[in-house]
Amino acid sequence: MRAIFVFFGGQRQWARLALALAQGAPVPLLDEPTTFLDPAHAISVLELVRKQARAGKTVVVVLHDHMLAGQYSDTRAVMNNGEVIARGTPKEALRKDILAAAYGIDVEIWDDPFSDAPRHRFPRCAQGLEHSKDEHQRPQFGVRSQRL
Image (cartoon, rainbow, N blue to C red):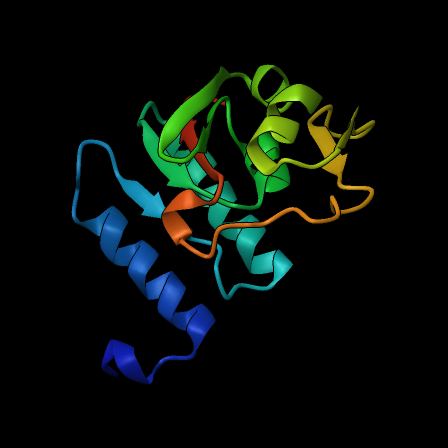
C-alpha cells in the first residue's frame, strides 16, 4: 500500500473519491472530483456518482465544467460572487441570460442532439472585461445529483 502523496494527480483524485464515498456521509460533498482526470476517467467518476444517485443517495458535486454538469445532473445551481443566481434543471439554469450575467460575456446555447443536455460556447471574450483574480469572485457551479 502506498501513501496517497506518492500518487499522480489522477490517481490522487480517485483515492480522494474513494475516501469520500467510504466515509458513509449522508450527503457526500465532492469538490471538483474530475480535476486532473482525462475525459474517460472524468466520465467514469460521474457515472459512479450517477450510480449512487440512482440508488437513492443525494450527492453534491461542485464542477466548473458545466457541460459535464449539465449532462450528469438533475438539479444545478449557478453562483456568482457567493450568491446563487439560478437554480433548477440544467435547461432552466444554463440559459444565455444567466451565463452572460455570471461571466459578463456573450454566450451561445444549444441542446446537444445526442444527450439533450444544454451546450454552450463563448464566441469571444468581452474587451476590457476585468476578471477578478480572487477565486471567490469567480462564477461557481454547484450540482446536486439525485435519481437520474
